[in-house]
Image 1 (cartoon, rainbow, N blue to C red):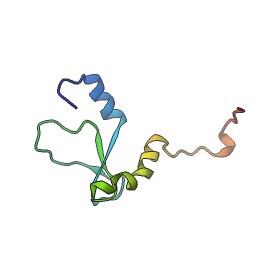
Image 2: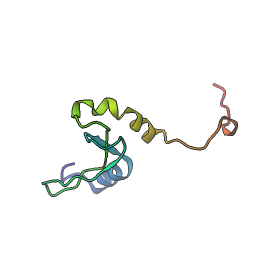
Image 3: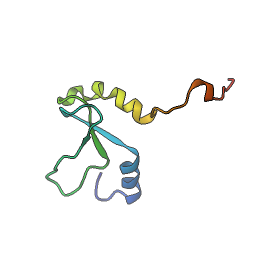
Image 4: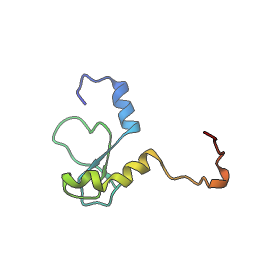
Length: 84
């Protein structure tokens, strides 16, 4: 993000986004890189599960789905059925 971006936008990204990055760590492991510039990343960074950038999209698919649809303890018996 640019320094001119509003603090609201920065706060939203920090709370609601993940950046999957190339890393040897298992997929989803929190990454805390030391950057050479003054600002921290716009959002939390986690390993995509592969050290090469060109493979990060494919390797992180499961993590992306887990981020948007976190597993819960809901069973079929507890779900109200909706008729379309």
